[in-house]
Length: 211
Image 1 (cartoon, rainbow, N blue to C red):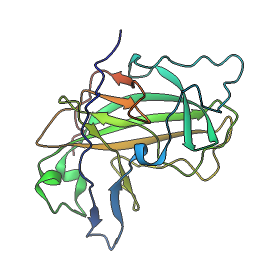
Image 2 (image 1 turned 90 degrees about the horizontal axis):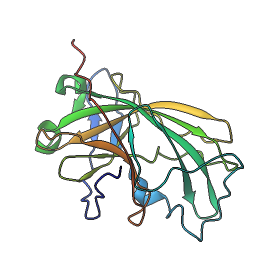
Image 3 (image 1 turned 90 degrees about the vertical axis):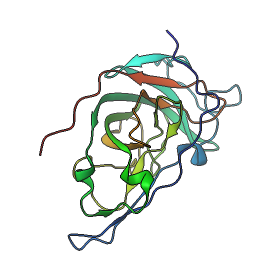
């Protein structure tokens, strides 16, 4: 099966969430993977695929919990093969953001989603120090950048790849997506460039945790 391809996808506006309680001055802003990575899986790619590793076809539709193996280049001549698994997605609540200043309607009237993701380096390169290259996709095919935090967000602890992320290294993190106007989330996708037909994960979204 092939998912719809968000060829004309719109990028959401930048977000800044500033901590205002518990004495924190941390901020949160969205990572923008398309601004920090180059086109992947093209004939000109210099990334070698290790023997025995089979890449997931562009345009693949996966269920939560299924792995995808994709070429990822954090910058030119620096790349590897990643195994990505979107394990689950859970709804969040506005109350989860107590301690952050939600200073515009976009942030206040959004729906909040928390995606648990595992990333493993199964290639030969080292691609540390960058955001996990995944997007949320809403029902209007709008790409939703994950919010990254400079202070801990307890309901969904978010981490970027560590400074060194060599072969065999693994990371499990949680990505926060805000869907505007109480919108939904149709899936999570790996789409490092406009030319890449995205790999998309879908499945049942869990309800928000009760307080």
